[in-house]
Image 1 (tube, helix red, strand yellow):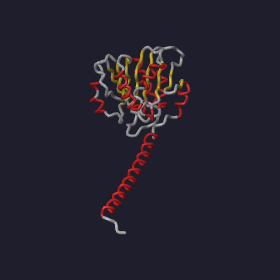
Image 2: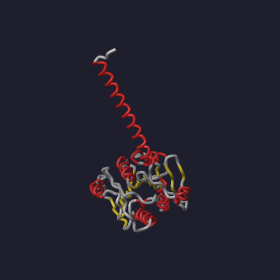
Image 3: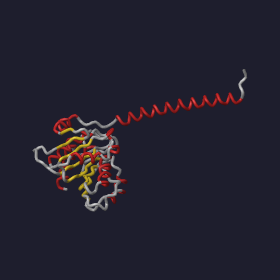
Image 4: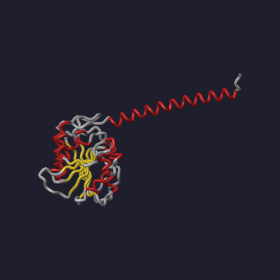
Length: 248
């Protein structure tokens, strides 16, 4: 039986559609694997942080660090971890800040990216009702998201601490106190965008550059791709942060 021109075109068209469908399917699968690889690849906390995590009280979505001397405080700091960094890498810093007289709440972020958990601070504030004075603190992407959250809660957040980060949220007209800290050898922080967004910060802003510090040493997760080499130890950089928070 001889096929008509229309039948031949129809078969050819169906064949092309099948090929396109197969190609799309392969692309979707490939992107799926790439996505899984991206979200499961992150900087893991160093082994020694386990001793700090054991001191903390673990809630479902965050860890609570309290002063080691058992003293009570009504001042709370909500900490947002850096992008693609295991949150427990910040346990040593959180505990040392807590020892300075704060309750510190280290938030667990979805797939280690604060951009997917910007509003998690609200859940902490609703649960921890004994805190009368709230502050936000964050490293890198976590700092940017902490600033964004603070910008939407200026009536509740009294201060913001940025570690190797800048605020894209306009806080310039708020009465919020801001402390921004970055390492002298930080090669991850985009300095151009840092300067561009400086105008978003309020008048009550204090800036401090840690001599010899870098981007990764705000946490305990080793070196970070693209970062500069620190000429001080991780412990020294963290201690400077604690001292600056106390002075601030």
